[in-house]
Image 1 (tube, rainbow, N blue to C red):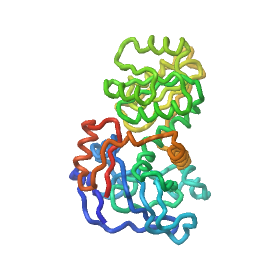
Image 2: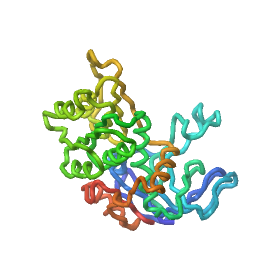
Image 3: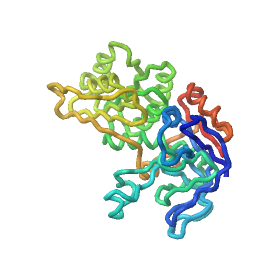
Image 4: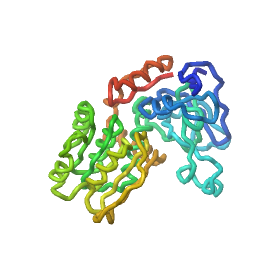
Length: 343
Protein backbone atom coordinates (compact mmCIF):
# COMPACT_ATOMS: atom_id res chain seq x y z
CA UNK A 1 0.00 0.00 0.00
CA UNK A 2 0.98 3.64 -0.33
CA UNK A 3 1.68 5.55 2.87
CA UNK A 4 3.31 8.77 3.99
CA UNK A 5 6.50 7.89 5.84
CA UNK A 6 8.32 10.36 8.05
CA UNK A 7 11.84 10.15 9.43
CA UNK A 8 12.91 12.53 12.23
CA UNK A 9 16.42 12.19 10.82
CA UNK A 10 15.63 13.64 7.38
CA UNK A 11 12.66 15.72 8.52
CA UNK A 12 10.86 15.11 5.23
CA UNK A 13 7.59 13.20 4.70
CA UNK A 14 7.65 10.95 1.65
CA UNK A 15 5.10 8.65 -0.01
CA UNK A 16 6.37 5.07 -0.16
CA UNK A 17 5.14 1.53 -0.77
CA UNK A 18 4.89 -0.41 2.50
CA UNK A 19 3.11 -3.59 3.64
CA UNK A 20 -0.41 -3.33 5.03
CA UNK A 21 0.00 -3.36 8.84
CA UNK A 22 -0.69 -6.65 10.61
CA UNK A 23 -3.78 -6.67 12.83
CA UNK A 24 -4.54 -8.39 16.12
CA UNK A 25 -7.58 -10.55 16.78
CA UNK A 26 -9.52 -7.62 18.27
CA UNK A 27 -8.56 -5.13 15.54
CA UNK A 28 -9.80 -4.19 12.08
CA UNK A 29 -8.18 -3.02 8.86
CA UNK A 30 -9.77 0.14 7.44
CA UNK A 31 -9.34 1.37 3.88
CA UNK A 32 -8.87 5.11 4.40
CA UNK A 33 -11.15 7.44 2.43
CA UNK A 34 -9.88 10.70 3.92
CA UNK A 35 -7.49 11.87 6.64
CA UNK A 36 -7.04 15.43 7.87
CA UNK A 37 -3.85 17.38 8.44
CA UNK A 38 -3.70 20.41 10.73
CA UNK A 39 -1.51 22.39 13.09
CA UNK A 40 -0.96 19.54 15.54
CA UNK A 41 0.60 17.52 12.71
CA UNK A 42 3.02 20.36 12.02
CA UNK A 43 4.06 20.34 15.65
CA UNK A 44 5.15 16.72 15.28
CA UNK A 45 6.91 17.20 11.97
CA UNK A 46 8.72 20.35 13.05
CA UNK A 47 9.66 19.06 16.51
CA UNK A 48 10.96 15.74 15.13
CA UNK A 49 9.46 13.59 17.90
CA UNK A 50 10.91 10.28 18.97
CA UNK A 51 8.36 7.65 17.93
CA UNK A 52 8.62 3.95 18.60
CA UNK A 53 10.29 3.34 15.23
CA UNK A 54 12.85 5.45 13.32
CA UNK A 55 10.45 5.85 10.38
CA UNK A 56 6.70 5.92 10.87
CA UNK A 57 3.36 6.79 9.24
CA UNK A 58 1.82 9.98 10.68
CA UNK A 59 -1.80 11.08 10.53
CA UNK A 60 -4.94 10.98 12.63
CA UNK A 61 -8.56 12.02 12.15
CA UNK A 62 -9.67 9.58 9.45
CA UNK A 63 -12.73 7.85 8.03
CA UNK A 64 -13.08 4.95 5.63
CA UNK A 65 -14.50 1.50 4.97
CA UNK A 66 -13.64 -1.69 6.86
CA UNK A 67 -11.61 -4.06 4.69
CA UNK A 68 -10.95 -6.86 7.19
CA UNK A 69 -11.94 -7.76 10.75
CA UNK A 70 -10.12 -9.78 13.39
CA UNK A 71 -11.32 -13.14 14.62
CA UNK A 72 -12.63 -11.70 17.91
CA UNK A 73 -14.53 -8.79 16.32
CA UNK A 74 -18.29 -9.39 16.40
CA UNK A 75 -19.91 -5.99 15.89
CA UNK A 76 -18.27 -4.94 12.63
CA UNK A 77 -18.01 -6.42 9.14
CA UNK A 78 -16.15 -5.68 5.90
CA UNK A 79 -17.90 -2.90 4.02
CA UNK A 80 -19.02 -0.98 7.12
CA UNK A 81 -18.43 2.77 6.86
CA UNK A 82 -16.61 4.10 9.93
CA UNK A 83 -14.83 7.05 11.46
CA UNK A 84 -11.83 6.24 13.62
CA UNK A 85 -11.02 7.61 17.07
CA UNK A 86 -7.36 8.51 17.43
CA UNK A 87 -6.25 6.51 20.46
CA UNK A 88 -5.88 2.92 21.62
CA UNK A 89 -5.23 1.36 25.00
CA UNK A 90 -1.67 0.68 26.14
CA UNK A 91 -2.69 -2.80 27.41
CA UNK A 92 -0.18 -2.48 30.28
CA UNK A 93 -1.50 0.07 32.81
CA UNK A 94 -3.50 -1.04 35.89
CA UNK A 95 -6.78 -0.05 34.21
CA UNK A 96 -6.00 -2.07 31.08
CA UNK A 97 -4.93 -5.08 33.15
CA UNK A 98 -8.32 -4.95 34.88
CA UNK A 99 -9.95 -5.30 31.46
CA UNK A 100 -11.41 -1.78 31.40
CA UNK A 101 -12.09 0.00 28.10
CA UNK A 102 -9.61 2.28 26.33
CA UNK A 103 -11.50 5.29 27.72
CA UNK A 104 -10.11 4.34 31.15
CA UNK A 105 -6.50 3.80 30.02
CA UNK A 106 -4.03 5.94 31.97
CA UNK A 107 -1.37 5.75 29.24
CA UNK A 108 -3.41 6.06 26.05
CA UNK A 109 -1.46 5.56 22.81
CA UNK A 110 -2.10 8.10 20.04
CA UNK A 111 -2.38 7.33 16.35
CA UNK A 112 0.40 8.80 14.24
CA UNK A 113 2.54 9.27 17.35
CA UNK A 114 2.90 5.98 19.19
CA UNK A 115 1.82 3.76 16.31
CA UNK A 116 1.41 4.09 12.53
CA UNK A 117 -1.27 6.57 11.57
CA UNK A 118 -3.86 7.22 8.90
CA UNK A 119 -1.94 8.97 6.10
CA UNK A 120 -2.01 5.72 4.17
CA UNK A 121 -4.29 3.58 2.05
CA UNK A 122 -4.98 1.32 5.04
CA UNK A 123 -4.80 1.63 8.81
CA UNK A 124 -5.18 -0.85 11.66
CA UNK A 125 -7.20 0.11 14.72
CA UNK A 126 -8.98 -1.55 17.65
CA UNK A 127 -12.60 -2.35 16.85
CA UNK A 128 -13.58 -0.39 19.97
CA UNK A 129 -12.22 2.83 18.40
CA UNK A 130 -14.80 2.86 15.59
CA UNK A 131 -18.02 4.82 15.18
CA UNK A 132 -20.48 3.97 12.40
CA UNK A 133 -20.96 6.58 9.66
CA UNK A 134 -24.53 6.88 8.30
CA UNK A 135 -24.94 6.08 4.62
CA UNK A 136 -25.97 9.62 3.70
CA UNK A 137 -22.93 11.23 5.33
CA UNK A 138 -19.85 11.74 3.12
CA UNK A 139 -16.82 10.04 4.60
CA UNK A 140 -14.90 13.30 4.14
CA UNK A 141 -17.35 14.98 6.53
CA UNK A 142 -16.93 12.15 9.03
CA UNK A 143 -13.14 12.59 8.93
CA UNK A 144 -13.56 16.24 9.95
CA UNK A 145 -15.47 15.15 13.05
CA UNK A 146 -12.52 13.10 14.29
CA UNK A 147 -9.65 15.05 15.77
CA UNK A 148 -10.12 18.79 16.21
CA UNK A 149 -13.91 18.80 16.59
CA UNK A 150 -13.84 15.82 18.93
CA UNK A 151 -11.07 17.40 21.02
CA UNK A 152 -13.05 20.61 21.44
CA UNK A 153 -16.20 18.70 22.31
CA UNK A 154 -14.20 16.72 24.86
CA UNK A 155 -13.00 20.01 26.36
CA UNK A 156 -16.59 21.24 26.64
CA UNK A 157 -17.53 18.01 28.39
CA UNK A 158 -14.56 18.34 30.76
CA UNK A 159 -15.68 21.86 31.66
CA UNK A 160 -19.24 20.77 32.38
CA UNK A 161 -20.52 23.66 30.25
CA UNK A 162 -24.14 24.57 30.90
CA UNK A 163 -26.62 26.73 28.94
CA UNK A 164 -26.38 30.51 29.51
CA UNK A 165 -22.82 30.31 30.84
CA UNK A 166 -20.38 32.96 29.61
CA UNK A 167 -17.51 31.47 27.58
CA UNK A 168 -14.17 32.85 26.41
CA UNK A 169 -12.05 31.06 23.80
CA UNK A 170 -8.34 31.91 23.40
CA UNK A 171 -7.05 30.50 20.12
CA UNK A 172 -4.47 31.01 17.40
CA UNK A 173 -5.86 28.65 14.77
CA UNK A 174 -9.08 27.06 13.58
CA UNK A 175 -9.58 24.66 16.47
CA UNK A 176 -10.87 27.44 18.71
CA UNK A 177 -13.57 28.26 16.19
CA UNK A 178 -14.78 24.66 16.35
CA UNK A 179 -15.30 25.22 20.05
CA UNK A 180 -17.19 28.45 19.39
CA UNK A 181 -19.62 26.56 17.18
CA UNK A 182 -20.11 23.72 19.65
CA UNK A 183 -20.49 26.12 22.59
CA UNK A 184 -23.34 27.83 20.74
CA UNK A 185 -25.00 24.45 20.13
CA UNK A 186 -24.70 23.83 23.89
CA UNK A 187 -26.43 27.13 24.66
CA UNK A 188 -23.48 29.15 26.01
CA UNK A 189 -24.04 32.91 26.16
CA UNK A 190 -22.26 35.20 25.64
CA UNK A 191 -19.40 33.63 23.65
CA UNK A 192 -16.20 35.66 23.35
CA UNK A 193 -13.41 34.73 20.93
CA UNK A 194 -9.89 36.05 21.48
CA UNK A 195 -7.46 35.73 18.58
CA UNK A 196 -4.54 37.90 17.49
CA UNK A 197 -5.31 37.31 13.81
CA UNK A 198 -8.00 39.50 12.18
CA UNK A 199 -9.06 36.62 9.92
CA UNK A 200 -9.37 34.37 12.96
CA UNK A 201 -11.65 36.86 14.70
CA UNK A 202 -13.76 37.24 11.56
CA UNK A 203 -14.15 33.48 11.25
CA UNK A 204 -15.09 33.20 14.94
CA UNK A 205 -17.95 35.63 14.41
CA UNK A 206 -19.10 33.57 11.44
CA UNK A 207 -19.09 30.47 13.64
CA UNK A 208 -21.30 32.06 16.28
CA UNK A 209 -19.16 34.17 18.62
CA UNK A 210 -21.00 37.18 20.04
CA UNK A 211 -17.79 39.23 20.30
CA UNK A 212 -14.29 38.77 18.87
CA UNK A 213 -11.37 40.54 20.56
CA UNK A 214 -7.65 40.94 20.01
CA UNK A 215 -6.00 39.61 23.21
CA UNK A 216 -3.20 42.17 22.74
CA UNK A 217 -5.69 44.99 23.34
CA UNK A 218 -4.98 46.44 26.79
CA UNK A 219 -8.71 46.91 27.42
CA UNK A 220 -9.65 43.24 27.08
CA UNK A 221 -10.38 42.89 30.80
CA UNK A 222 -12.79 45.83 30.81
CA UNK A 223 -14.49 44.58 27.63
CA UNK A 224 -15.05 41.15 29.17
CA UNK A 225 -16.40 42.74 32.33
CA UNK A 226 -18.84 44.87 30.35
CA UNK A 227 -20.01 42.04 28.08
CA UNK A 228 -20.59 39.68 31.02
CA UNK A 229 -22.25 42.43 33.09
CA UNK A 230 -19.50 42.26 35.67
CA UNK A 231 -19.73 38.58 36.50
CA UNK A 232 -16.75 37.45 34.45
CA UNK A 233 -16.44 34.24 32.48
CA UNK A 234 -17.94 31.00 33.68
CA UNK A 235 -15.62 29.00 31.44
CA UNK A 236 -12.42 29.98 29.61
CA UNK A 237 -10.77 27.69 27.05
CA UNK A 238 -7.09 28.21 26.25
CA UNK A 239 -5.87 26.57 23.02
CA UNK A 240 -2.66 28.63 22.84
CA UNK A 241 -0.86 27.40 25.93
CA UNK A 242 1.35 30.43 26.62
CA UNK A 243 1.96 32.13 29.95
CA UNK A 244 0.23 35.29 28.73
CA UNK A 245 -2.96 33.56 27.61
CA UNK A 246 -3.10 31.58 30.86
CA UNK A 247 -2.82 34.76 32.92
CA UNK A 248 -5.36 36.66 30.82
CA UNK A 249 -7.89 33.83 30.74
CA UNK A 250 -7.54 33.10 34.46
CA UNK A 251 -7.98 36.77 35.35
CA UNK A 252 -11.18 36.89 33.28
CA UNK A 253 -12.88 34.15 35.32
CA UNK A 254 -15.78 34.95 37.56
CA UNK A 255 -16.53 33.34 40.90
CA UNK A 256 -16.30 29.54 40.56
CA UNK A 257 -15.13 29.91 36.97
CA UNK A 258 -13.31 27.10 35.17
CA UNK A 259 -10.23 27.47 32.97
CA UNK A 260 -9.67 24.56 30.57
CA UNK A 261 -6.14 24.24 29.23
CA UNK A 262 -6.44 22.24 26.01
CA UNK A 263 -3.21 20.51 25.02
CA UNK A 264 -2.66 21.07 21.29
CA UNK A 265 0.51 23.14 21.33
CA UNK A 266 2.50 25.15 23.85
CA UNK A 267 4.56 28.30 23.61
CA UNK A 268 5.80 28.32 27.18
CA UNK A 269 5.86 26.64 30.54
CA UNK A 270 3.22 27.77 32.98
CA UNK A 271 5.63 27.57 35.90
CA UNK A 272 4.44 28.48 39.37
CA UNK A 273 1.45 30.73 39.79
CA UNK A 274 0.67 32.86 42.82
CA UNK A 275 -3.06 32.88 43.43
CA UNK A 276 -4.62 35.80 45.19
CA UNK A 277 -7.65 36.51 47.33
CA UNK A 278 -10.79 35.79 45.33
CA UNK A 279 -9.32 32.80 43.50
CA UNK A 280 -11.05 30.35 45.85
CA UNK A 281 -13.56 28.27 43.93
CA UNK A 282 -11.91 28.76 40.56
CA UNK A 283 -10.74 25.62 38.80
CA UNK A 284 -7.98 24.92 36.28
CA UNK A 285 -8.56 21.81 34.17
CA UNK A 286 -5.95 20.17 31.92
CA UNK A 287 -7.53 18.48 28.92
CA UNK A 288 -6.12 16.28 26.16
CA UNK A 289 -7.93 14.53 23.33
CA UNK A 290 -11.37 12.96 23.50
CA UNK A 291 -13.24 9.70 24.03
CA UNK A 292 -15.09 7.51 21.55
CA UNK A 293 -18.40 8.66 23.04
CA UNK A 294 -17.57 12.25 22.07
CA UNK A 295 -17.06 11.20 18.46
CA UNK A 296 -20.30 9.21 18.55
CA UNK A 297 -22.22 12.27 19.77
CA UNK A 298 -20.79 14.44 16.99
CA UNK A 299 -21.75 11.92 14.31
CA UNK A 300 -25.31 11.97 15.63
CA UNK A 301 -25.40 15.78 15.68
CA UNK A 302 -24.21 15.86 12.07
CA UNK A 303 -26.67 13.17 11.01
CA UNK A 304 -29.58 15.13 12.50
CA UNK A 305 -28.54 18.35 10.79
CA UNK A 306 -27.44 20.15 13.96
CA UNK A 307 -23.78 20.29 12.90
CA UNK A 308 -22.76 21.07 9.31
CA UNK A 309 -19.05 20.56 8.65
CA UNK A 310 -19.09 21.04 4.87
CA UNK A 311 -17.71 24.58 5.16
CA UNK A 312 -14.89 23.30 7.39
CA UNK A 313 -13.17 21.53 4.49
CA UNK A 314 -10.71 23.88 2.85
CA UNK A 315 -9.31 21.48 0.25
CA UNK A 316 -9.00 17.78 -0.57
CA UNK A 317 -5.65 16.68 -2.02
CA UNK A 318 -4.27 13.30 -3.07
CA UNK A 319 -1.87 11.63 -0.67
CA UNK A 320 1.02 12.25 -3.06
CA UNK A 321 0.70 16.00 -2.42
CA UNK A 322 1.47 15.73 1.30
CA UNK A 323 4.27 18.33 1.09
CA UNK A 324 1.92 20.84 -0.55
CA UNK A 325 -0.72 20.14 2.06
CA UNK A 326 1.69 20.75 4.93
CA UNK A 327 2.75 24.03 3.33
CA UNK A 328 -0.89 25.12 3.12
CA UNK A 329 -1.41 24.36 6.79
CA UNK A 330 1.85 26.02 7.82
CA UNK A 331 1.06 29.20 5.87
CA UNK A 332 -2.60 29.20 6.95
CA UNK A 333 -3.98 28.85 3.45
CA UNK A 334 -7.75 28.20 3.60
CA UNK A 335 -7.40 28.91 7.34
CA UNK A 336 -8.99 27.88 9.58
CA UNK A 337 -10.69 25.14 7.60
CA UNK A 338 -9.57 21.53 7.55
CA UNK A 339 -7.38 20.16 4.78
CA UNK A 340 -7.96 16.52 3.86
CA UNK A 341 -5.75 14.02 2.07
CA UNK A 342 -7.27 11.21 0.04
CA UNK A 343 -5.14 8.05 -0.52
